[in-house]
Amino acid sequence: MRLTREVALAATPERVWQTLWDVPRMVACVPGCVEAREVEPRRRYQARMSQKVGPIALSVPLDIRVTEPTPDRLTIEARGRDGLLAAEVQMSVRLAVEAAGAGSRLRIEAEGRVLGKLGALGAGVIQRRAEELIDEFTARLRGAIGG
Image (cartoon, rainbow, N blue to C red; front, side, top):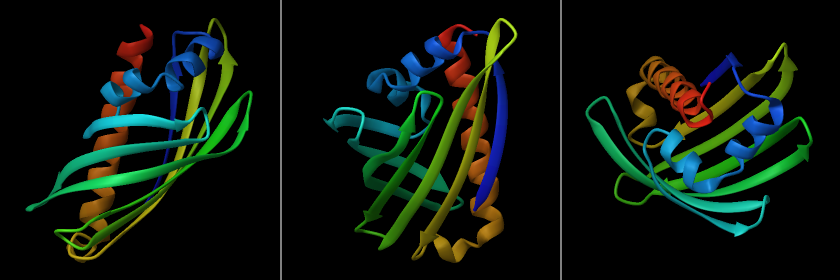
């Protein structure tokens, strides 16, 4: 699964980054994220994602690592496994924020792999669900930053 989105936001890049680094606000923005905690500030997090894809529901504890942070971009690597379904999830998400007029532009590039029963649903089903989730995330993020 791969996807890219560019989103115009009515907030400065500083405000966008402030929101992106705020763990409780991100829990509210990420669809299916039921909990998250900072393990090592701005470097390592743990979270639990619960999602339904087709007829399969899963709950995955994720180990999340922030790599390559710079003032205008970062990469997040996440891995987890749902023991009941023997489903493994691997994701890489790159976020970049740049000034655009009075606001900013957020670019999201995501790649992921789902293995196990869930992966057997097929790439098309997983790709569509990922697109729905990223669109929901960007809508919630707009609400969280007021733009």
